[in-house]
Image 1 (cartoon, one colour):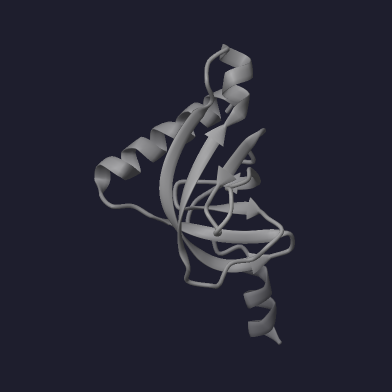
Image 2 (image 1 turned 90 degrees about the horizontal axis):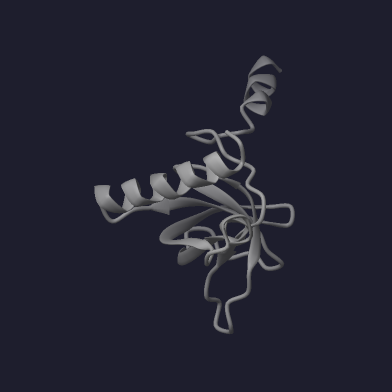
Amino acid sequence: MLLRRLLSQKEDRRRSPRLQPEDVVAYYWTGGLPRPNAVSGIGPDGARIVAPGVLYLGTVIQIVFEDRAASRTHGVEGDRICVYGRVLRAVAGGFCVEFVFGGASERRRFRQFLHRLKQRNGG
C-alpha cells in the first residue's frame, strides 16, 4: 500500500517546471493542413498540446510553437520557434511531448523563446 501511495504522488514526472502560457499554439503536420492547437503547458524539456487526435507513443514530430499574444502586445508578427518533439503519453484532450534538440544552439534558442514567454506572462 505504501508503494502504491508513493507512486501515485509522483504522477507528475516532468524534469522541469512548465509555464501555462496564454495564447501559445502548436502546429504540426499530420497529413493535411496544419492547424493551430493550444499549448496548455510548456517548459525547457517538453510540452502538453491540446489536440483532438492522439499520435502514437514514440512518434517524433516537428512542431512550430507560435506566441500569438506577442503580435497583439507588440504589434509585430508572432514569435515562433520550430523544434522536434517525441510523443511521450496521451492525456485527456491531447498529448505530451519531450523535446529532441539537435544541439546546444537549438536548445539555447528554445530557452530564449521560453524566456520571452515568461517575461510576457509576468514571470
